[in-house]
Length: 130
Image (cartoon, rainbow, N blue to C red):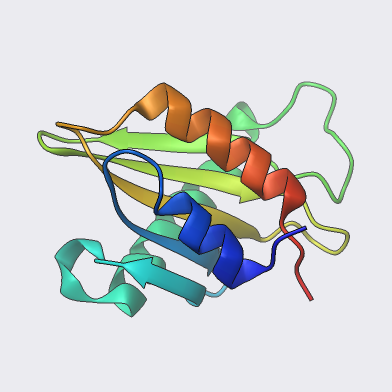
């Protein structure tokens, strides 16, 4: 079971990975970072990713029909694409409040969005926090 650093290093082995972070989406703080951040600043990228995660997580229309368990993440993942990259936020289930997400920045030219989504899901399930 990998910790934060091991998980982020594994994330950077994905094809096209430019940078990654583990973000607390309630506070906007980066709990760990690796690689190059979009815009050149890890803390700003984490705060902006947290804002996007919070926007998705707090909307009832995006939540599960059955309401889910209180410890389950409200959303599975969020994908934002632009001309040259993909930004993937994968919510991490935790035993406390599930308020963290893995954030991956992928180059569109050589990244594989489907593979990244699958691998982030696997990493989120194995990640050990605390």
